[in-house]
Image (tube, rainbow, N blue to C red):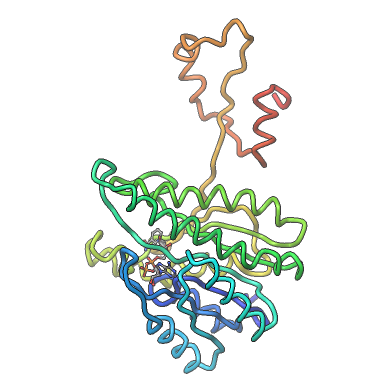
Length: 298
Ligand code: NAI
């Protein structure tokens, strides 16, 4: 069945270019009214302009869709609240939020200033928190909401020179996990995408022949499914260049010992058993994992 977004209202942050633009165009093509947000700054977060967001709105409108531009920084809670209020006033509801806005300030940790760290955490993690907080009550009241966070392989697996970015990006996975629990009762589902795509963020990191295979449109199918009516919740999906995989935070069976054996030496002696991935599981919640540690589920 064709996935449609008729009568749905979507907000896509950082949608003036790259992945966000691809999501906004595809959502609009499939019937959604789209608020295209973008601060319009440089890759490191400096500067601002509404023209990038407006250009995407113009594209959507030219193709017969409905869209509005907004230049709020996702880190500005007052501006984000105004943006959300404006969308509700014009279109009556908010069904989809894609938290996509982001910046890079790559450096080795040794050379990274605390300001570079804070800025990146502020935009990715707190920016997503700010936008999500602004729509959360509306989605609960509507008993419908689909929220997508944007993580990265840097957060899930680490990348040299991206300590700030990796920390912020894995923070979003933690946020998604709890929101998917708290939203379940209200039909508010929350997922996370880990894209890999040729955008200005990656243009100087990979060779051109590789970039040619990974346009933003290769990530879009997963993003749209993850905010659709039949979306799952609590999924982490890696997408790009035709590859679609799921990532999990797993738990090994480990060992369970009596008090007398709870020594650092015993951990050293049994390290291989603790690390053995045979039979590893994915706990439903942190509380469930705690119960396992207590031996309740062994
Ligand atoms: P991009 O730089 O083209 O897009 C990011 C957009 O966010 C820009 O248009 C920028 O103006 C906007 N933005 C930055 N700060 C903002 C703020 N404070 N408020 C509102 N908008 C703001 O890069 P790309 O690749 O499209 O990135 C989209 C998302 O995907 C980011 O969260 C990025 O970290 C993530 N990502 C991208 C990967 C890739 O391979 N391209 C890999 C992993 C994650």
